[in-house]
Length: 78
Image (cartoon, rainbow, N blue to C red):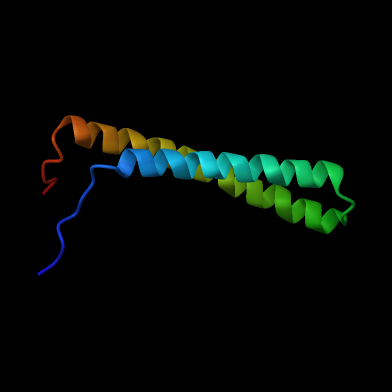
C-alpha cells in the first residue's frame, strides 16, 4: 500500500528551497564579479541565474498553492 502524502511541511520546504536558490544566485554573482573568468563562463552563469530567478517565481506560486491547500485542510483535489 502506498504511503499517504504528507503535505504538512511543504510550505517550509519550498521556502527553504527558495532561500537556497537566492543564496546560489548571490554566490554566482559574487563569483562573476570577483573572479577572473572567460566571458563564455560569465554568460553561462548569467543564464543559469536567469533560470534560478524563474524557479523562484515558480516556488512563489507553489508556496501560495500549498498555503491555500493548508488553509482548506488539504482536501483531495479530485
